[in-house]
Length: 144
Image (cartoon, rainbow, N blue to C red; front, side):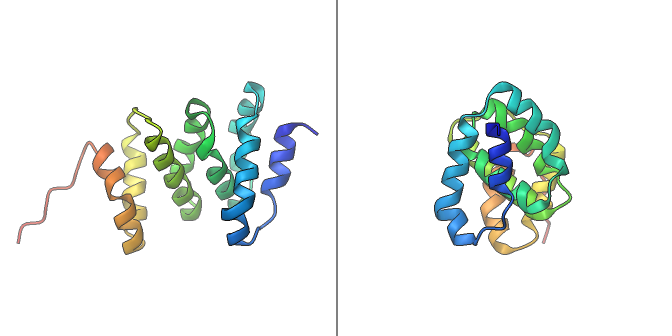
């Protein structure tokens, strides 16, 4: 099997959340950093055909990927109709920003992050700095 096939198989199981976040994601991170250019092309072309759980785990695994390889996938994940996939992508986007990612993201992606932030107070607080950083069309404050 190729490394991409190994990664795909590794992302398939629905891991216990604690095991995933404490151990398995580190294995997936290592696999992602070893992908070759042709693997990235295949991954970019195929990730959307996978189940949401697999996509979420991929988003988590991409947080240590080379930004120039992972960002095109993450920006598409931000627009996923599955909220959990888009939320995982926001987490990876935050990791990329912490690594110095300087580029703006699309206004469509910002609007998606805004809509996700309305799902809970935790998301609102977590995503507010991203929204402030990238939003080119901030809403006017409500008058009282």
